[in-house]
Length: 397
Image (cartoon, rainbow, N blue to C red; front, side):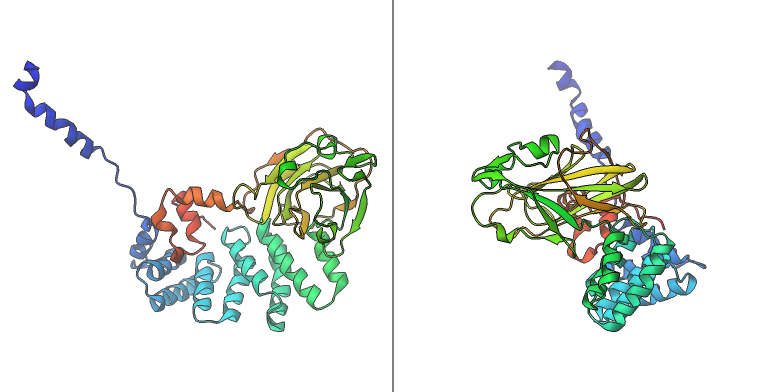
């Protein structure tokens, strides 16, 4: 106490030290601010001009200046991905979907490995079937983009866009070829219902998810369950005809892979489900607990030979539209052969999951990562800002 009274100035040091050590977070627009300064130099790069265009659009709110910057960037480098993406979003701003599609398709072809290629492919997917001229452009560019090395979700979306076009043009052979390249299951074995309940039966283990077996002899709440084989020419199944009583179904298929390759197992549905590959639980969609995306994926190292995919699904008294595919991560055609799952599983000792860059991520993962910089996740930031928000850096070409 005596020492404290003799040196009261010591008490004032601690607040000063706290202020001196406080960390000042970087500005959410730091990358764009630097690009805007670089663009004023004697010989700015196409990348600096492109990012300065986003600075003009997102920070300054000057669309005309942004357009000039993007135009200048593409004069320096016609293949600059950020310049093409800038042209894409500004074309939509002035209600020119044709110009937006042209920029999006050029983006997938010029920078097939860039993260923005996924956005370009998504734009093509959204515009598929809107106009005959659009469809012709999509089909032409899709072939070249895939040959250039488009992969992951970008390859999936662009092939899907081509499949939509062939379907609308009633070109069944071309559509079947696209579905085969996408690794879409064209037949499934259906078994169920296993439970009298909907959600309550979701986590109760049933024999097919324990052993992978799909033979007869299983018993449900209403008697013996007999496997039914479903043919899916368009790659989707609906359980709307199963009625309101009972739930928990199993969809299974055997997959023959010709070569060792990394695949992305992908399901599209709005109902709860679990996906197993050779006994390994890849993921589960628990939409009765929280909001979940309708698209779920997992990367797997698929070895040559036969494998079994088992999906446990809760219909929840809905139509339960469902689609399954095993697309090649490298963008190459899947070339898988599907057959109805019957009897004992060919193997049920687990599968190797791999982290696949560029595949779709759950929406909640983006939300958690964006919480680090909420200011940079405003609605005007556009999909491009997701990477800045998550990492604070701009992906390279």
